[in-house]
Each structure stands twice: as C-alpha cells, then as structure tokens.
Image 1 (cartoon, one colour):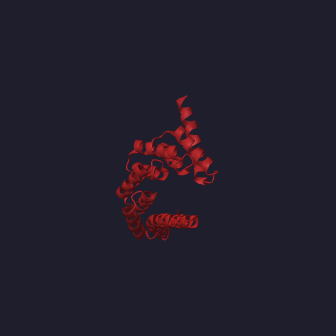
Image 2 (spheres, helix red, strand yellow; image 1 turned 180 degrees about the vertical axis):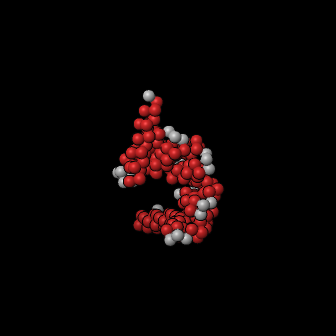
Image 3 (spheres, one colour; image 1 turned 45 degrees about the horizontal axis):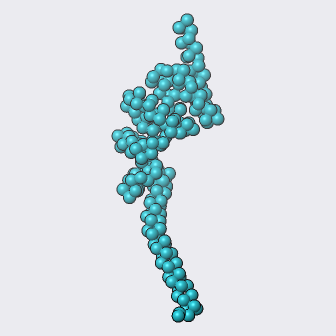
Length: 199
C-alpha cells in the first residue's frame, strides 16, 4: 500500500504542474495577438494624428500600411477616402468608399461621401440612392439629410422632398445651421409660388 501523504503530495504536484501549463499556454497566445493588435492600433492613431496635423500624404501612407496588415481595420477605408477627397482624387476616394461599404454595410459616412462624388459626376439617381442608404444605416447622421436635401433641391428640383430633408437636418442639429434656416424660408416661398402657378 502507498502512504496517503505521498499520494496527496503527488496529486498536489500534478495539479500545480497542470495549472502552470495552462497558465503558460493562456499567456503565450494572447501576447502574440495583443502585440499585433497593439501595433495596428498604434499605426491607426499615428494615421489619425497625421490627418489632424494636415499631413495628408503621410496619413494616406499610414492608412494604406494599416490596411495591408489588416484589410478589415474598421473605418480605415473611410478615412482613406476622406483623405483622397481632400486631395481632389475622386477616383481613389470613390474606390476607398466602395471598399468601406463592402466591409461595413452600415457605414453612413462612406455612403454619404460616395454620394457626394456621384453628385459631382452627374450621377444624381445613384447619389440619391446612396444618401438614402446612409440614412437607413444611421438615421441620426445629420449630414446625409443635408446632402440629400441639396441634391433634391438644386439638382432634382423636388422641393417638397428637399424641404423634408432640410427640416430633418435642422431637427438633428438643434437648428444650429443659419444657412439652412435661410434655405428653408426660400424653399417654402418657392413651393408656395409653384402652388400659385398651378392654380
């Protein structure tokens, strides 16, 4: 027969060895993942700092480097698109926004800025569709309503719908835009004039 104290000692030693193995395995995997994530987060922050500092070319390089490391980096394509817009490179911007939307179907900013480019290129119906997708993706994103209102007002001449979009924009921004306040007065006057002509 074995001595019970020897058996208990062996069991305790075995448990300690198992715990040590489990802990070392748990630490080694997250450290590798965490190091990669930390490097990407650092690069993302650097790119945003470059963007804020007005270093557009450096920010573009950093976002592109980040996307090579992690093609699924959230909002990196959107930021890249905005940088290309600032350089007036609409084709690169358009592709970046399309990539952003492919990655995240709820990226209201990407839809809105893609629609702005489409409006500038005379693709009014496609722009309208993308503004509407932006609003569906984020009903609280005020700029989508403003830009849709401009499209409907100036380009598509749909004054009642433009009025509705401007009003929604003002509601979301607590009537903070004085220009839009003037546009609302003007558009209501134009709608009344159309009604008078129709009589």
